[in-house]
Image 1 (cartoon, rainbow, N blue to C red):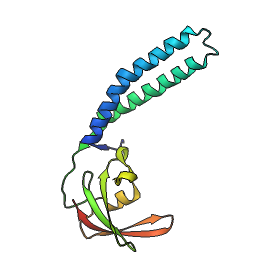
Image 2: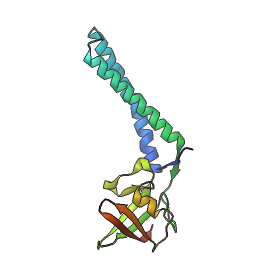
Image 3: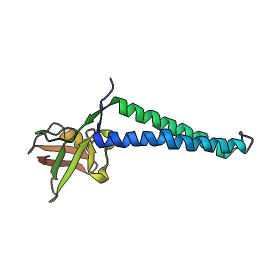
Image 4: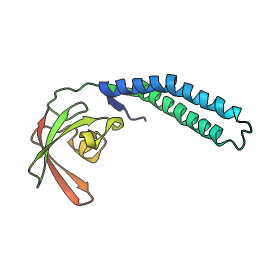
Amino acid sequence: MEETNYITEEKKHALQEELKHLKTFKRKEILESLEAAKALGDLSENAEYHQAREDQGKTEDRINQIEYMLQSSVVVKKHQSSKVEIGTTVVVNKEGIKDHVTYSIVGAEEADMTANKISNKSPLGEALFGKKKGDTVSIKTPKGLAKYTLIDIQ
C-alpha cells in the first residue's frame, strides 16, 4: 500500500514552476548542448556529449518525479485545528530549555529544519501528530529521551 504524500499550496506552486522551467528552458538547453557536442565528432570519447546525456537523464528523472508528486500528493492548506495535523503550526517547549520553538507540520517533501518545517514522518512530527494543546510527548534521540510539551496549536 502506498503512503499518502502531503504538500502545501506553496509547495505545489513551487513544483509547478520547477516543472515548467525544466520542460521549457532546461530541455532546450540540454538539446543545444547535445547538438554542439555532436558537432565535435566522435561520440565514444566525447565528454561533452556524455555529460549532456547524463544531464538529460537527470532532468527527465526530475520531471517524472515532479509529475508524480503533483499527481499523487494531497494538497493541504495551513489551518487552525484543536489537534496536530499536517498544515498546522505548533509551539512546543523542550524540557530543560527556556524558549519555545514554533514548527510548521508539513509533508515529507517539504521538511526543512532551517525554516522550522518538520515532516509528519519525523520523530518529533510523528510524536506530536494527533496530540492536543497541553500534551507531552517523548522521543528517543542520540542523547537520550527528549520531552516536549505542546504549548499551542495555530
